[in-house]
Image (cartoon, rainbow, N blue to C red; front, side, top):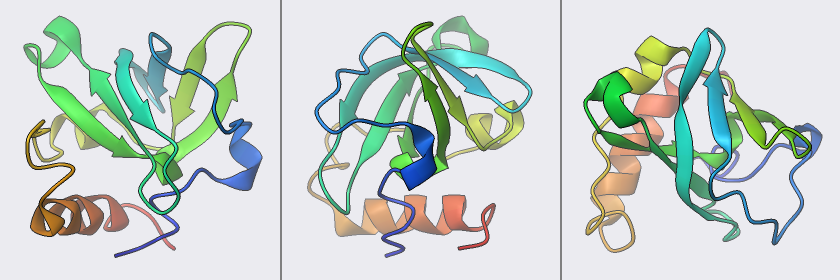
Length: 117
């Protein structure tokens, strides 16, 4: 597993313990939804984004390493992915994401293919 992908970048502006629930999420080419859930767990930090009607209610899990910036004043998170990359990501599985290492490996493989780590 690519641990750099599952931790916030030092330049992201993330503060450990901050509640990001409800923050808007912006891809490089526009808005994708709002944070429904998040984790700061070392080596497994992520955001679960509710995409609403944009992808017909699909939730997506974005590894914390995709976050390039957080604007706390405007409650907005900027990720280093396009809307298309997020739309094509593996569907979030609420039951598997904490218990199935294969699911994390699938996510790791998908998102690492877009990033040079």
